[in-house]
Image (tube, rainbow, N blue to C red; front, side, top):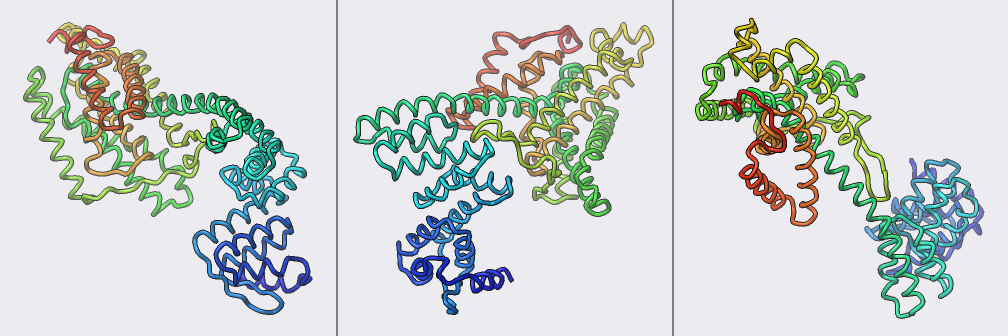
Length: 496
């Protein structure tokens, strides 16, 4: 249908509106002739040329009543796509022009210079105009005279685009001394601005990883940090929260498709409650009888973790399952050129901060929090003044398990969900709690952020695997020198 409309439009146009030879070469030419034909059509700047190129991309054009078949390969398709993007610069729609300008700023054919300059003269939007100036400077630098190249190099020096850095780096090796000096000067300016963007990207990635580690470790900060229980099934409680989110997503798809973008609002409390109930059952049936017996607790919870993983494999299957992001968590913000902050990562950072604040309020401003702190500091005295220590243990363990479920819910937004999901975070969670200081929630926050930054910084130098090994070795040596971690608080684990 689209092709027929294009043919009708073309047959209705005057025959002399376009360069016939260029149109014919586009269809029947060989090698570079077809790309030169595209350049000629673009240079004319006639909107009718866009219709011809669109038809060529579909494999057939019509000239003087004759249908000409166009053999389309990947390069020709790419050249036509770039040419059509250039024609979109003349669109009356601001969004269309902006996307076209962004595409051309990443690379354009020298033949498009005339069309870019024509669009630049008409453009009134400051943001689009800045992109077009970069494109025009890039094209002029490659095809202009010596004076035009130097002027273009200086204009590129005001750019924040990584593409400008690439162009200037090539020009910095130019045999002409004046062009070389101008390119080196502009290159230093661009690299300085891009370095700030890279630092901002590294900082965001560090905070993002730190927030994920914080969510994974907050629950462990209660079950291990406050209660002194080494729970090797903590990772599987994270996994349970993730699968609870997956089930809620499927229920919304089946019964509430119109409200799918809001499924997380239901998944968050469900993940918390399901993981908390599993944790309380675990405490009541197993851990209650093993307080103060570290090795037995470790072995028992490790066996429970294997049982939970096998149960999930049996019910959901061994393959990973996918949890989709709501529409408002797709895409991201381009804070700097080439530095995109994904919405799902931003939301996880905000979510981690909210969970942290709510946990602090619960532990410091509620009766349950008072009981938990009392039992942690002196279990016998708390029992003597009427605190139901057994019930507090169950509720505290359920709270830590529920927060692990929230971590699982958050992790579904950045990756697939599988039976082994929790295994990827159990070691990191223990490292965060031990490094921050057993029994100290503030230390958990600082430790998560420090380890997040260390991991991301080292990844850029050594790679992800070596970075984790270096961080682990550092924590081992750190704990040898400072067993209480960054911060320490007197509690049951310390007294033991």
